Length: 198
Image 1 (cartoon, rainbow, N blue to C red):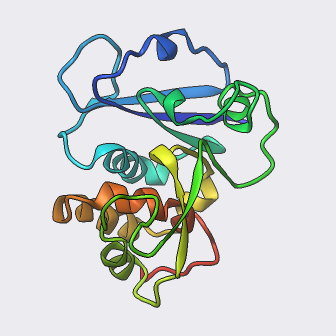
Image 2: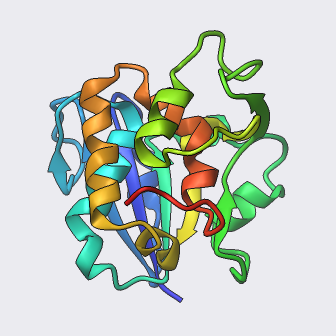
C-alpha cells in the first residue's frame, strides 16, 4: 500500500520530515514562505493556508495519482494530534496500522453548527462555500477536522470532478475565510453520500 504525504509548510521546523523514511511513501512538501532548508516540490503564493495547498496538489496530480492514500498535513502536524502518542492519529501517521477505511481524520474532530459554532469564534462562511460546491440544503451540523489533517483514499479524490476542485481552489481567492470553512467541510467533501454540483 502506497501513500503520498502532502505537507503545507510555512514557518515550521521540518526536522521531523527530514527524518521520516518509509519505503511506501512519497513526500510532496509545498512552502508558502521563501526558504531553502528542504527539497520543496514547489513554492506557492501565501494564500488560503493549508486547504489551498491541498487542493493545489489535488488539481496538479488529479490524473496521475498512483498511491492508494494521500495524507494531508500541516508543517507541524503534531500540535493537532490530541492525547498520547498511542492514539489513532499517531498510529496512522507512523504507518503502524493497516488502513481499511477510505477516510481517517488525523486529530481532533469537533461538532459544530452551520455557522461554525462552537468550533470557530466567527462565521467563516460555511454556507457560502457549501452553496457554491453543493447547492442544496445545508446540513444543520458538521464535524470539523482540527487542522484539516486527514488521510484519504484516492477514490474519494476522484469522487469529485476536476471542475469541483478547480472551483474549490478559486474560492480561496474569492473568500478570505475559505480555509476555515473548508476545515469544517472536509469530511463532507470526502463523503460519497453528499452529491456536489460538479
